Each structure stands twice: as structure tokens, then as C-alpha cells.
Image (cartoon, rainbow, N blue to C red):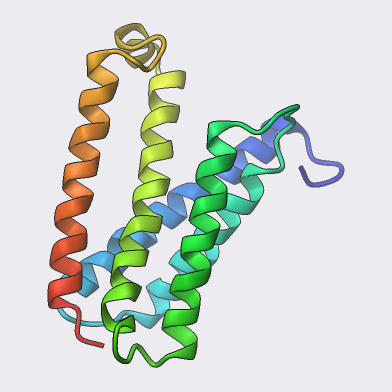
Length: 160
């Protein structure tokens, strides 16, 4: 957590950064599916998504949580995506690794969003209090299927 910042303020900042990452990621993936690159939204997406994962480690904790594991994997994926985007000119295999990695990084953000919604929204929490119930699993399955389709079409149509 940033020194001098309350937990509530830090949480709000983390959520805002996460939502910016999701919104900009949707713009990036939409551009990819249309066969083009969007440099502005890509910069916003990559920066905010890295910040989302990094700030996730700023919350108090006493052991490694599943959210930390998702954050670590996301940062690895983002490192590959950033190398692909800025160091390879998207040549060769990077033409498909880059869009696949962007979609995967966005998926991780949305996956965590769904987890948080089921933890924080009372109506959803009632439907799946332990997140092992069918409504939670169904929601995550729908999200996974949507992102598999987005990933496939982004890789197929992206033309850097």
C-alpha cells in the first residue's frame, strides 16, 4: 500500500486502475478483432494492467493468496506481451503471441472482477457464498468461453 494512504483509498485506486485496464483492454481486443492495432489504447491497457497486478500486492496479507498467483501469472504474460509489442515489431510468431497474450491478460482481469463481484455484491454472494456453487462456476465458464472466442478471433484477424 502507498505510504500515508488509507486502505479504503488504496482499494478505490486499485479498483479504478483495474476498471481502466478492463475498458482499455476491451478497446484493444476490439481493434485486434477488426484487424488493426490501436497504439493509444494499447499503452493505456498495458500500463493499467501492470499497475493492477502490482497494486494487488499492496494489500495486507500473511500468506500467498490465489489473487497473488493470478497477479504473478498476469505479470509474466504482460512481460511477454510487452516484449512482443515493443521489441519484435510483431514479426513471425509474435503476430499471434501478442494478441493471444493481450486477451489472456484481459481475461485475468475479468476473472478477478467476477470473483470480486461474487464476494462483494450481496445478491451474488447469496447465490454462491463459497464460490464453489453453480452460479459462480457458470459465470466463470461463460467468461472463459467468451474470452476463448475473443482470443481465437483476435489472433485470426489481427494484422499488425
